[in-house]
Image 1 (cartoon, rainbow, N blue to C red):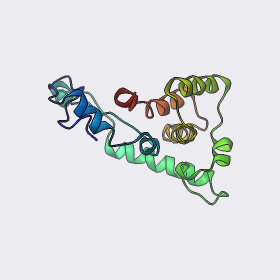
Image 2: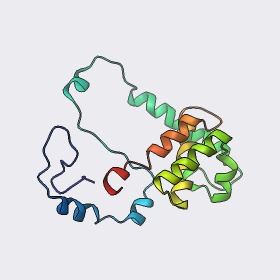
Image 3: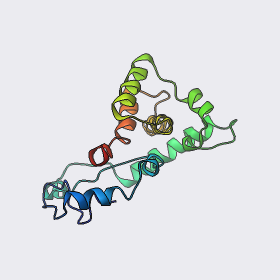
Image 4: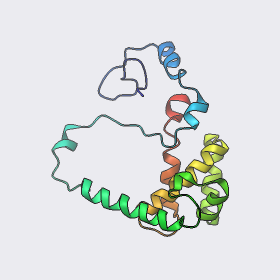
Length: 162
């Protein structure tokens, strides 16, 4: 969704023409409980010309497809005795079984939970997303970087709904 009716709130390249009241009314059309049901929140910033014209090598769609196929294969193998096929289908019991966190990661998630006032639903979604990120990275275990990336996907809305 756009951040406001005109679409430019927070855009460094354009001036927003909306009043604070218009922005608040617009953002309040989506309730926190609805946002909480969306797994990943990502802010997409405007693309700069130099990013479009760079010669820097980027990951190709073909390479991304291979990583996704490998992650799906990993998940299918992991859940062959579970009656599910993907991380998104995990129950709370399965999350505890397949999303093990070490002491440092438990501290990270605790601090994030307190700072961002995550719900229990958000907590489980973060763990599922971290498990998926680890799978895409080809890692057997969730690492700190996977958990922190998953947390970032749940905090973008803080900028607008705080």
